[in-house]
Image (cartoon, rainbow, N blue to C red):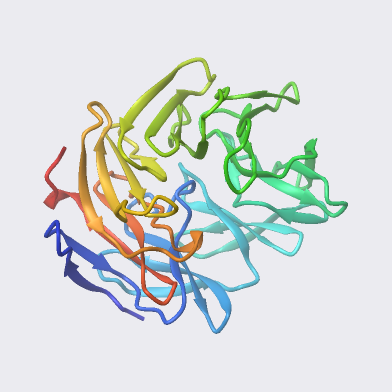
Length: 337
């Protein structure tokens, strides 16, 4: 199957590659997990067809695509360093080899549901925020060498967006989910001591949201909505404003530490544009890459992120019916800010 075509953005003049033309939703993975294989040959996306979702692998250079996982497999999160991902089917967790498609069961989880995609620590421990069958929220870790998920933290708050640090086996970020602003959103769990602490301590008026680790785990990027892209060290002792604008919603850094991509949407603040931007990580200056339609729901948000080499930005492009398509822009054509 191949649906690839190109068009020029009417305002920037940049060429956009559109990989899908689905009648239902086609969306890239959330920006907090990898999308590309290590050789940049393939990327993955989620497609809804006849009410059921499937995961597809796309050859970037040609646009040829194939379904590799069906609706039974959920919560896929790719490893930042290796060519595999982890995915859930029932209570079982499988390692999915992204180049070959091979599936290997590595363990089971306690009864309940994941509240986000899987993520892996440096040595390959598999983490998820969770709601147990008794409705209590928790953090769960699965060591593939042991094969059984362990509940290591319980909480009365809704826990979400759990991301194990790719740079160690100790630091696990999670958030208190309110579907909006929170008094204290970002928390860091220390696995050896089983203790938690606030990561970025919020003051009155802060609206903190949309966090993502760098691929080496040295920094955590997040939004101080709506104006600032922030970066903090792993230990939470040092924070820096990386960029400032009228509105940012999501951001993702490249692996080289040179660039950041971000989206902005009109949302509740009418008059803002719907755009993808490229930001210089040293100066904070930005260049608009693409202008988009207004998304109907959060599922159609652009959620831009880079390929492994920092040469491509992959994003969702909303369409009028309330769905979206998967697009990319190659940065060799772009005026660097």
